[in-house]
Image (cartoon, rainbow, N blue to C red; front, side, top):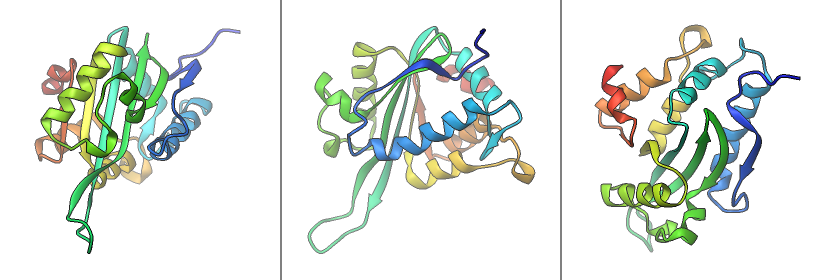
Length: 192
């Protein structure tokens, strides 16, 4: 039986599924599986499989996608306000399919500093990309943002709950300074 277009590789590898950051990745993977298993008309919060498939097929043959999401933890009696990583994931993409997913915690064994020390700044973003490029694959896209912006982008729908142009929305959020996009494919963002 011939396999139809697919977003996820037939044999998807999930690394470090027991890590604390995996809890934030699991629902996104679950949504991707739902998109994968339904027909082309299925829409999940503005996402539709054909658009994801087109995006993945436009990437280099072997690359990675990163997402880092931080949340501001308010001041407490024992601690000052600080940024905490709440979602950090790397998707390895080969020939337009996601073939492996790992959290940033998996990168510690490859030389990344401890997750608790990662900050939403340019130095840590560049270090994340360096480690991924050296040990996994070149970074096509890296998205770094706060939790509110992540949720706004992830769950935005089109009119009447339909398809939403997620690239257009992400570009708008980046232009507003609400997220940072980096990587080898960011030159194409200006074409949109």
